[in-house]
Amino acid sequence: MKTRMIVLAAVVGMAGTSLIASTSISGKYVEARTAEVFTGGCIMSSEADTVGRQAVLAWKVDRGSFNGVALDGLAVVAALSGDANLGIHEIGGVRAHVRSAVVVDERANAAQRIALVAMASELAKSNMGTVVNVTSAPIQFTESDHGINVSTSQVKLEVSTHVDHDPTCGSMQWFAPLAQVTDATLSQTEEHSFTGSSLGTKWSAPNKRSSYIGTFAH
Image 1 (cartoon, rainbow, N blue to C red):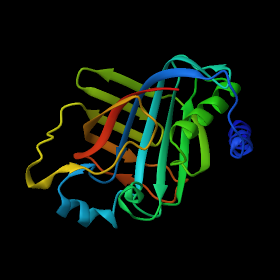
Image 2 (cartoon, rainbow, N blue to C red; image 1 turned 90 degrees about the horizontal axis):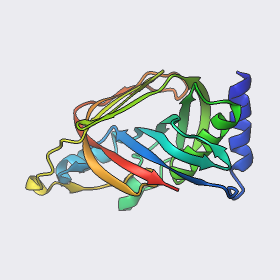
Image 3 (cartoon, rainbow, N blue to C red; image 1 turned 90 degrees about the vertical axis):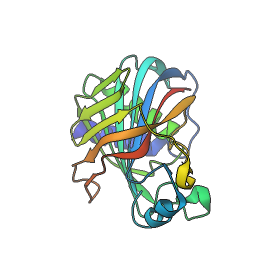
Image 4 (tube, rainbow, N blue to C red; image 1 turned 180 degrees about the horizontal axis):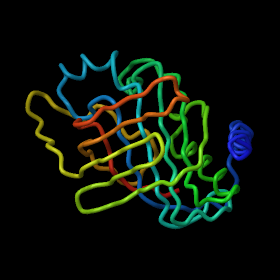
């Protein structure tokens, strides 16, 4: 509890200020949503007001530091829940009000936990909204030729690089990634779930063209 409060206080304190220098960091990124990203207009219209309000974002640092704190090899996961489709503002809708729950790598020390939350908030470009909960837990973030798997308390994510991008029936990409990326590929979500209690909702949204796999550098 004490660690959680320290992290939350640090994030709130930085919200209205520019993040300081000594930031040079890179790694892997994956996200999945509860609505299709690549689909036809009919499916998009049916989902726009009913789903797409939740997402999971995950980062694994290959090397580098954020705000002067080394984060090599550490991971952070954010579960987002909004009152509207998280990407609908990109096509003329209202921007969702979002609450997020963050899991930081249990191997991180106190300074690294604060830096991981700050890094995620910065790279997510305000899409994380209000951070309401921060916990520390083991995070498995594994990569293969087939995709990325992320597993931690409250979150399960399996994303495959093999996805059908056939534009028949008017299928197209509707939304950009929710975080800053240097390279991102539309991917197939095999498993995507959040079982925590801090956001007032739980979800499971497998088997969708609703994810991105990419890299980040900042």
